[in-house]
Image (tube, rainbow, N blue to C red):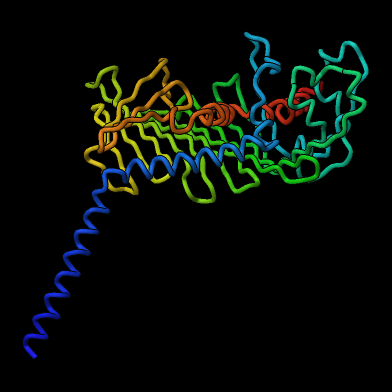
Length: 352
């Protein structure tokens, strides 16, 4: 009997030792970081392919090339609430050679009052805002296939030194939902800048940008699928009079399960699912000077894995950087919303 007990105990001990070795090998695998980063980069690339193929992304790609500017030296002060501009506005081509100099509201007819502001217009005109106030022969064939339904809005400003802005809207293209927009911006000479914008796509992805100024400056750009982070860049800049240039900066980049952190002393840390990868190293190169260093804006990051092999973020995500950069820039400005909602609001307020 004792002999059988000893044999059984020895067998169990061997199983425990084998399990322990296996567990240790998995936890310290030199390919853990490489596998996690490769998989997370693939998920990001798939997401950006889906997003870039959407019409909503084309909207966000609209640039400032057609933006009408206010005259310099002029003092402006206004308070434009949703109640002032609410109603249903339908685009109607204005057949005149001088239309390019007309107020935008002259291209719209107001149908009925409503509790919100609803803008119906051709998507093609919004995609090319340079011809927004210009009549083209092809306009007669266009349909009002774009709808922006603004459910919350106010635009309070005083020569841009004091600024309080909100724009919350649902987007429809060709009678199908194309996502939703949410912008909140506050600029004050005393409290500084607080800005947040996000666009929720219909395929489950959400892009967000946030910026807060002050003694501690915080900025972040995030791409989510549901509640899972696919991509996130964060910058924390803290005022320190004893530091070089008076500030200490901490930067982090998250791609799926992998997080890279550059500390104020320029040392770097790499994590996989919050587990520090002590033997991995990271180097960063900024190709241009900017207050918001970013992979989306000329920052290259090289990772050396525990097995000694190397790669770069640009190698892993390739052309995805271009589309991420478009999202990053567009969420700073959201020009397509400014072209129609804000300028119709200005026209109504100033009775043009």
